[in-house]
Image 1 (cartoon, rainbow, N blue to C red):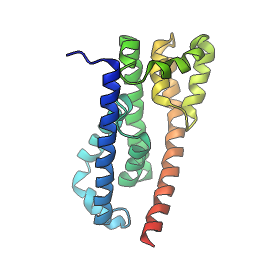
Image 2 (cartoon, rainbow, N blue to C red):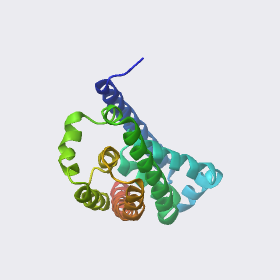
Image 3 (cartoon, helix red, strand yellow):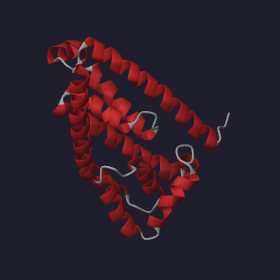
Image 4 (tube, rainbow, N blue to C red):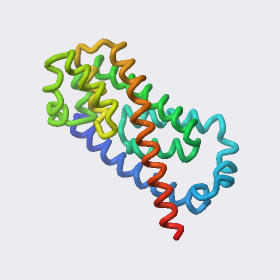
Length: 201
């Protein structure tokens, strides 16, 4: 059965809502276990997940980049909270980079017909004006990937539609992604700590 682009986007939206509810319930459960407020309890909880945990998390990050049903900020925070600032950053980085590269090839191979299953035509057209000059778009793309608030997933799909060389795309992702991931992770971690402290009082 062939799904229309509109139907696909609706299913993704529904999946996002369901995933959001599951995440909230998991956070409440983990909070009740005390793993957000006790380093010892967190280590005990992760003790039997040292191998499978990181693998599953990286796979989740790859999937959420290609099929955005999990808010990126939530998965970034999860990596740092559960695996620590260094390991969490590495797992976030690896998963997001792999997902971004997959997005590029999917857009390049399947074109707009694939992209419209993820985003609307209006959203894509809003950014298409930047692709008229390839050299300018390469710089625009690099700056946006470096900027924390840019719609990275949309831009990665858009890059696949242009004449950007793969290795140009690859190095922009590899060199620019760490800074945005670090900025998001630090902001989310300190924000989460403040929230936990507030709830504790």
